[in-house]
Amino acid sequence: MIALLFIISFLFHIVFMIIIYQLYQQLQMMKQQNEQHLETVLENFLLEIKEENRRLQMELDESSQETFQEQKTPSTSGKDPILSYVNLNSDEDENTYKQEKQEDKVETSLEGQVLQLYKKGLSAEEIAKKINRGKTEVSLILKLVKPKV
Image (cartoon, rainbow, N blue to C red; front, side, top):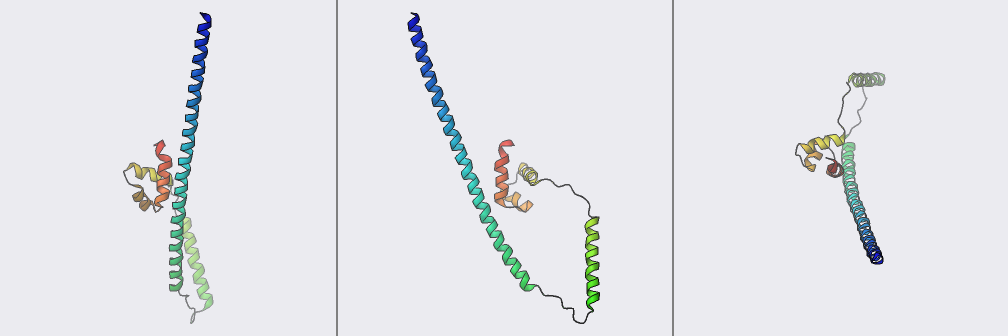
């Protein structure tokens, strides 16, 4: 009788060990799938950011070429070069004074701004326009912070 109970107990132990091993394998497979999914999401965002940066660089290059063509150097003919130098220095002094006079401001972080606007019900595209950031950057912040919210 005792031998029969030992055999049954031994068989239960083997069955439970097989079940535990199967569950462990499933857990490892789910972890690997989650890691692959996260990797593909981040790769896609990286590609979108690169594309957005490339377009921005092209726009900046175009606008800088336009301003370079439109920009004319002021001629100092008929004016005293010393007086024009003094006028330039006085303008710099005024700018320095204005910068010193500015008050300190407390600004919300980019992440904080995005979350505040998201809680108000704005979409990622609307938030990007409102805070002058890329749509990809805003959606990345939302996706990374959303599980915490």
